[in-house]
Length: 391
Ligand code: AMP
Image 1 (tube, rainbow, N blue to C red):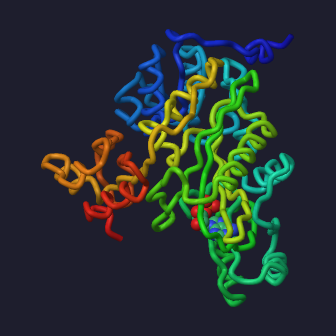
Image 2 (cartoon, protein in one colour; image 1 turned 90 degrees about the horizontal axis):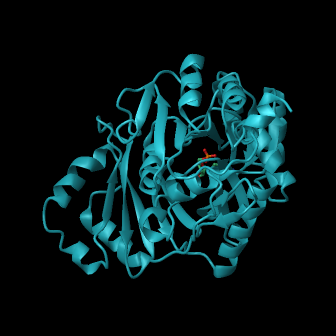
């Protein structure tokens, strides 16, 4: 048996073990907080000194593609995970050779590329928005004619929060859209525009032994392409919620996921579901689980990569998660320092999580608030009454 196969034999890591995280942002921080409470130790690799995860765990300060640093992470960890999906392929392969990486590198390879991801979702028997690979401006012209306008041109790699995308609203934009996105020098994909009624997401966890648990569906509202609110339960029919949950299970199974997979979906007015994209890690739309579910997405991720039985995902209360961006920090801190009359009407005080980022830059994700209430409407009313998130 090769050394690589030996390293990747399924292991159960009990509390006391050290979990290495590639990346030191807020997702790693919340993972380390949840896992530390269970008795695990954490070490993160991140280039920014005193990164959000480094404030609650050990940190190796180095670039993600620094092989010596990755090797040191492997040496000091019993198991390696990651908190972002754009992990360098060489680093992933090296870590697989030197350490135990139960999530493997194949899922990263798939989800780093929109075309590969769409093909994998379809192979699992799940629908995505109709799409075409685009290799030239002529192919784009043909595809726009086939789909009609509007349609969405996307880079296959490297886009996030709406970056690397162009909504083509008329045929006159074809050349400019192509030239602008082709500059990224990666493959392009054109998607039919889905006139969705709602955007939702489902997070599933799968252990190396194949146990799968799904969190309740979140309804997501974006502002300027950045997640603003996650509303749970999502305001869609019970039947659609169940369909979305089954579909996330199918993807977790079909793609051989270990750890978490976040599935973002569009819901049309006539109740059709299309997968938009996947993220193989804890997801912003799952932050509501921290106070509202019996097990948080972060604890579940730790359980899955350590091969422990997965936790109960039951929702204990209606909840709305609202993201705290740079511009929201000062008014929110002011509010926390004075009596909040509106909060007294809620069943639990709104729970603020801050990520320890030093500079409150406009649009930067600095934290989030989980608002638990008798109803999601009551939670939404509190958010509105604060006037902090007025858009
Ligand atoms: P993405 O980076 O792919 O998640 O896209 C960012 C946002 O653009 C999504 O949350 C949607 O609001 C919108 N969007 C992306 N693709 C489509 C599509 N095919 N049809 C309609 N809206 C889309």
